[in-house]
Image 1 (spheres, one colour):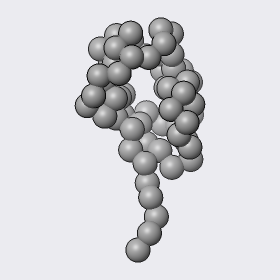
Image 2: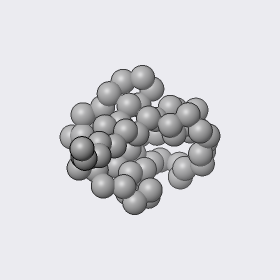
Image 3: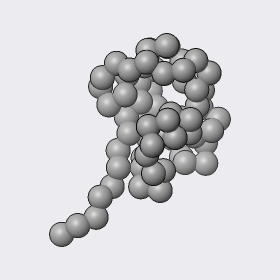
Length: 66
């Protein structure tokens, strides 16, 4: 199925959750904020959000530095 991730269409497995998406991309969840269909999703709910065709996901990571 195709969803938009950070504005770009990408193919993901059917029946994926936000947690599975993050793991499949090899990202560290500790520093991420996820917006799913224009709604910020708390980290404890990522596993409960099932991705569907044409969903929009924005993944933002925080990087420290000076």
